[in-house]
Each structure stands twice: as C-alpha cells, then as structure tokens.
Image (cartoon, protein in one colour):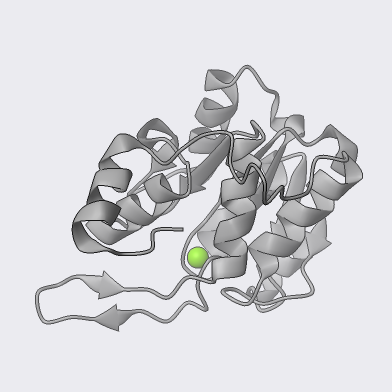
Length: 191
Ligand SMILES: [Mg+2]
C-alpha cells in the first residue's frame, strides 16, 4: 500500500462511486445518473493542479463523456466499455509515465477488484460490495455518490499540501473549448 504522499494520479469507476449506483433508464436507452457536486469540485481541482485523472467504466453514454470532459478529464483518459480495468489502469499509468504504485483507484463492485489490487492505493466507497471492501487498502467514510471521491482526493492533496481554492484565481486551466461553447449556448452550469 502506497502512502498518501506518493499518489500522483487518480482513477475511478463511475457507477457506485460517482453515483449511488442507481440509473434511470430512459425510453431511448440513455441512462441518467446523478453526480455529487462536491466530488466534481475535487476532480476539477485535482486536474487543475496537474494530477492526471481517469474514468474506467464498463458503461458508456454521451452524457458521461460530457461530464468527465467538463471536469477536466481529457478524452484519452476516459476508458469506456472497459473489460479489464487493471490493464486499462496500467495503460493510463504508462501514458503519464507513472507506476501503478503512484495511482489511487476507487471502485465498488467485483470487476473493480483487479484494479484495486494493482493500484498503489485501492479504495472502496463505504457501500461497496463486501469482496471489494476486503480487497481495498482503504474504505471511505462515504458511500457512492455521497462524497467518497471528494474524501479520497482531499486526503491525498491535503497530505501533499496541494488542496485549496483561490477565489481570486479560481482555475489555472479553462474548460475545454467545446464545453465552454456548450455552456454559453445553453446557459448551463458545467462545473
Ligand atoms: Mg461500479
């Protein structure tokens, strides 16, 4: 198990981690998910401070891609329809010249176990299935969609003195052009 001080990147499953696991199945096949703004703020902050962040999920939807991109996660670090999360995690680390020991991965169900075991810091939301909690180095105080992502990112960044928000200069990097255009067009808040 790596120390919080050694973590340089984050990777996350989506359903049951960013969400409470519930999906609303729409007639057109799209699945609607609810995200927690506190988690999203943490990802935006981590990306902005230069921590590579990845999404590694077995699912796929356009709204999920838009959400991830709006938080600062580049398209290339979004792994959809993942069949082997450990090898996707390895690929992500290699691309950023990091070792598996330098990455934290959070997941909640059986397909996440290999990545949890491979990562330097394997983390489970408090309501992950029992096998995942047993495999994890750390179990969050919070459940999926209830702030577990925020807690992990905050703990790591606080341990490294990088956590914080400057209202004078909110973000170093802007949203990607496409998201900014989308926000202006629709008047939607994309934070
Ligand atoms: Mg899941």
